[in-house]
Image (cartoon, rainbow, N blue to C red):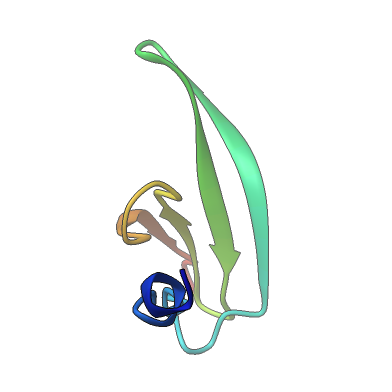
Length: 64
């Protein structure tokens, strides 16, 4: 059992390097509801898919 557990590697935390805060949110869409991680940076908002490898799904840049 120890050999099996020693082979498991922790998943690295994939987030934007300048992320100030992260929140788990539920997105409501015409396709349904699903979880996302909302990352707030000084210049933009990013949403990530928590299932899988935390791929960035959308980015909203602050104007100005």
